[in-house]
View 1: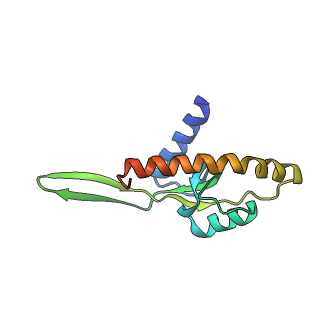
View 2: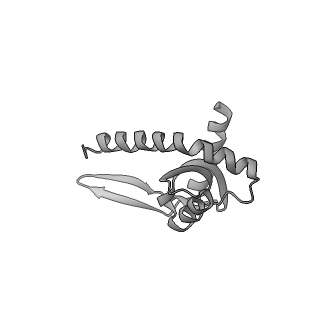
Length: 122
Protein backbone atom coordinates (compact mmCIF):
# COMPACT_ATOMS: atom_id res chain seq x y z
CA UNK A 1 0.00 0.00 0.00
CA UNK A 2 2.82 2.41 0.85
CA UNK A 3 4.55 1.64 -2.45
CA UNK A 4 1.35 2.35 -4.39
CA UNK A 5 1.00 5.68 -2.56
CA UNK A 6 4.61 6.60 -3.30
CA UNK A 7 4.21 5.68 -6.95
CA UNK A 8 1.04 7.76 -7.24
CA UNK A 9 2.73 10.74 -5.52
CA UNK A 10 5.67 10.49 -7.95
CA UNK A 11 3.24 10.57 -10.89
CA UNK A 12 1.52 13.64 -9.44
CA UNK A 13 4.89 15.40 -9.12
CA UNK A 14 5.75 14.59 -12.73
CA UNK A 15 2.38 16.00 -13.83
CA UNK A 16 2.95 19.18 -11.82
CA UNK A 17 6.28 19.61 -13.60
CA UNK A 18 4.39 19.53 -16.91
CA UNK A 19 5.04 15.99 -18.12
CA UNK A 20 2.23 14.82 -20.41
CA UNK A 21 0.64 11.41 -20.85
CA UNK A 22 0.94 10.22 -17.24
CA UNK A 23 -1.61 7.49 -16.55
CA UNK A 24 -2.40 6.53 -12.95
CA UNK A 25 -5.11 4.40 -11.35
CA UNK A 26 -7.34 6.54 -9.17
CA UNK A 27 -10.71 6.61 -7.43
CA UNK A 28 -12.13 9.48 -9.42
CA UNK A 29 -15.20 11.68 -9.73
CA UNK A 30 -16.56 10.72 -13.15
CA UNK A 31 -17.67 14.33 -13.61
CA UNK A 32 -13.99 15.35 -13.83
CA UNK A 33 -14.08 14.23 -17.46
CA UNK A 34 -17.70 14.26 -18.66
CA UNK A 35 -16.96 12.41 -21.91
CA UNK A 36 -14.70 9.75 -20.40
CA UNK A 37 -16.90 9.47 -17.30
CA UNK A 38 -20.01 8.90 -19.42
CA UNK A 39 -18.18 6.29 -21.49
CA UNK A 40 -17.03 4.48 -18.35
CA UNK A 41 -20.52 4.62 -16.80
CA UNK A 42 -21.93 3.20 -20.05
CA UNK A 43 -19.40 0.38 -19.92
CA UNK A 44 -20.44 -0.33 -16.29
CA UNK A 45 -24.16 -0.20 -17.16
CA UNK A 46 -24.71 1.99 -14.08
CA UNK A 47 -24.80 5.75 -13.51
CA UNK A 48 -22.05 6.21 -10.90
CA UNK A 49 -20.59 9.42 -9.51
CA UNK A 50 -17.22 7.84 -8.62
CA UNK A 51 -15.26 4.80 -9.79
CA UNK A 52 -11.71 3.50 -9.78
CA UNK A 53 -10.18 3.85 -13.22
CA UNK A 54 -7.00 4.85 -14.97
CA UNK A 55 -6.78 8.60 -15.44
CA UNK A 56 -4.44 10.88 -17.33
CA UNK A 57 -3.01 13.48 -14.95
CA UNK A 58 -2.24 17.08 -15.90
CA UNK A 59 -1.77 20.61 -14.66
CA UNK A 60 -3.63 23.31 -16.52
CA UNK A 61 -1.87 26.48 -15.46
CA UNK A 62 0.21 28.17 -12.83
CA UNK A 63 -0.61 31.64 -11.69
CA UNK A 64 0.18 34.12 -8.95
CA UNK A 65 -2.60 35.58 -6.86
CA UNK A 66 -2.12 38.93 -5.13
CA UNK A 67 -4.15 39.40 -1.99
CA UNK A 68 -3.50 42.42 0.16
CA UNK A 69 0.20 42.69 0.95
CA UNK A 70 1.10 39.09 0.18
CA UNK A 71 1.63 37.21 -3.03
CA UNK A 72 0.55 33.59 -3.00
CA UNK A 73 1.48 30.99 -5.59
CA UNK A 74 -1.52 28.95 -6.61
CA UNK A 75 -1.36 25.86 -8.76
CA UNK A 76 -4.63 25.54 -10.54
CA UNK A 77 -4.59 21.87 -11.29
CA UNK A 78 -6.81 20.15 -13.74
CA UNK A 79 -5.96 16.91 -11.94
CA UNK A 80 -7.74 14.49 -14.18
CA UNK A 81 -7.62 15.53 -17.79
CA UNK A 82 -8.97 12.27 -19.14
CA UNK A 83 -10.63 9.16 -17.71
CA UNK A 84 -9.40 6.07 -19.53
CA UNK A 85 -12.07 3.40 -20.22
CA UNK A 86 -11.64 -0.05 -18.74
CA UNK A 87 -10.92 -1.55 -22.13
CA UNK A 88 -11.78 -5.12 -22.99
CA UNK A 89 -12.80 -7.08 -19.89
CA UNK A 90 -13.92 -10.68 -19.57
CA UNK A 91 -17.42 -11.78 -18.56
CA UNK A 92 -16.01 -12.85 -15.19
CA UNK A 93 -14.50 -9.40 -14.61
CA UNK A 94 -17.78 -7.76 -15.63
CA UNK A 95 -19.63 -9.99 -13.11
CA UNK A 96 -17.19 -8.98 -10.35
CA UNK A 97 -17.68 -5.30 -11.16
CA UNK A 98 -21.47 -5.68 -11.11
CA UNK A 99 -21.24 -7.47 -7.74
CA UNK A 100 -19.15 -4.61 -6.30
CA UNK A 101 -21.39 -1.77 -7.49
CA UNK A 102 -24.07 -2.01 -4.73
CA UNK A 103 -21.36 -1.57 -2.06
CA UNK A 104 -19.85 1.22 -4.11
CA UNK A 105 -23.16 3.11 -4.08
CA UNK A 106 -23.10 2.98 -0.25
CA UNK A 107 -19.53 4.34 -0.14
CA UNK A 108 -20.35 7.11 -2.61
CA UNK A 109 -23.31 8.21 -0.47
CA UNK A 110 -21.01 8.40 2.57
CA UNK A 111 -18.46 10.50 0.67
CA UNK A 112 -21.16 12.86 -0.60
CA UNK A 113 -22.64 13.16 2.90
CA UNK A 114 -19.29 14.10 4.45
CA UNK A 115 -18.58 16.56 1.62
CA UNK A 116 -21.87 18.29 2.35
CA UNK A 117 -20.92 18.53 6.06
CA UNK A 118 -17.39 19.76 5.24
CA UNK A 119 -18.58 22.40 2.80
CA UNK A 120 -21.43 23.45 5.08
CA UNK A 121 -24.29 22.44 2.83
CA UNK A 122 -26.07 20.64 5.67
